[in-house]
Image (cartoon, rainbow, N blue to C red; front, side, top):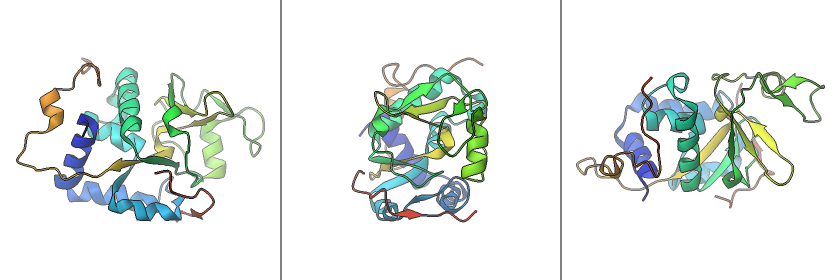
Length: 205
């Protein structure tokens, strides 16, 4: 079990109950559309928004986390995930391991989907199609589909299925033992593929 998975399991098992409730409740609120079969995965996985994962691992808000640490957390979490889906559309992200963190912001990049008129930003695309706007407009964007049709998403859109493991609260965390090894996460800066993509559950707006 990796340091990232260990820490997330630890936080979700013994962390603040209100925080855990918030992660689950957001399925039906903000960018929370999902494949209906994803509920079966809750027996084996924690279903967490990518932006939430980053904040849990860092212990701070996205706005206070440097881009290079965000990138490190994204790649580490994706490497451990069992699957992923887009909370704006409810679609499974089959090629989630091809994720690439971009140095651009949602207000800087245009959407090229067929639903949007030319020069529509990613922010306005979400407002039109998902009736929601990014909470972290200055956070890096995520690209998937490298080498074929690409798709650009915000951190809040992407949900990951993180494997559940039994973690003993009395045992020192592997995360602490590794002490945030530079090979996996850079030093702190000073300042499921079984799911069907056709079956979508619409979130309550």
